[in-house]
Amino acid sequence: MSRVLVLLAAIVPTLASAETLIGHADHVRDGDTLVVSGVPIRLQGLAAPELGQTWGRASRDAMQRIVAGERLLCGLNGERSYDRSIGVCRLDDGRDIAAILVSEGIGRDCPRYSDGRYADDETDRSRNLLLPRYCRPH
Image (tube, rainbow, N blue to C red; front, side, top):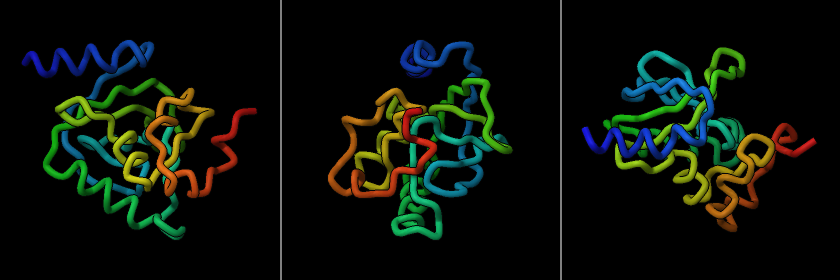
């Protein structure tokens, strides 16, 4: 129980008016979208290659490996993108899934939506991934 309280304390300050979802991944769509307890979630501030792009399948496969059998704590910010809720998901031990993907070189910080949250996690390989236009600040 204290582990859950520590995790809540870690993510709630970063997500104003957040809804918290605790559950397991039902499905991983790609490197930045998963379904947790029936809710599709787009990871906020992460740019991962699309499945048809270089590293796209590797990104999805890494997400599957990271979340397999893990309980997730997702702070949803109330925004939506298509059919997906937007949020930050952490493993039960507190590690941010997006930060793991970026540090493994198969995702990038999306500064327009992350405020640079994952910039320090980027590697040489992740910096070579395409940064989508929607990630660039206006």
